[in-house]
Length: 174
Image (tube, rainbow, N blue to C red):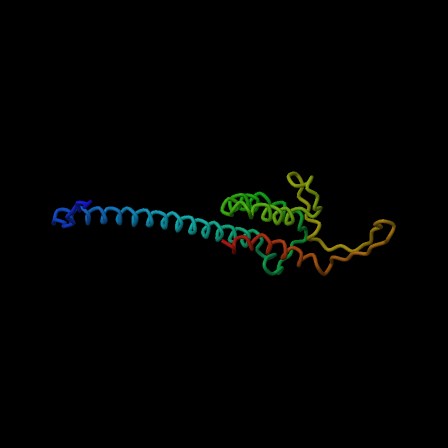
């Protein structure tokens, strides 16, 4: 048996070409618009994070002037000084925290806690400011029946700088 071959005409008219071209132009315009929109949103988010990081660094440098980055004017009473700055610094920490990705929140919270609390006890997390780690001490303690001598007279300012550095490194990561 012989099969009848069906001939199809693939000739395009000028009208068909115009319709196809218009369709590709529309699709291309939509893709370009969506890509531009996504890029603009991403750029706005990056700029917002950079601005928040600069503000965070600026607040810490302003409020801790004379102590950080170089301790050229250490106050006689560091506890009173830092307690007077706590509200401003805490607000800066709270504002900046939201610019970090959620996976960095715990590390950032721990760095902030280490800054304002020398006890290291999580029970003191919300209600206790303790700045004893920024004061020079010498003494000894009995731990498990053994006497342990401690001397922070040479390290207390370095501890302060290290704790501030730990906070500000998050602003440099943005």
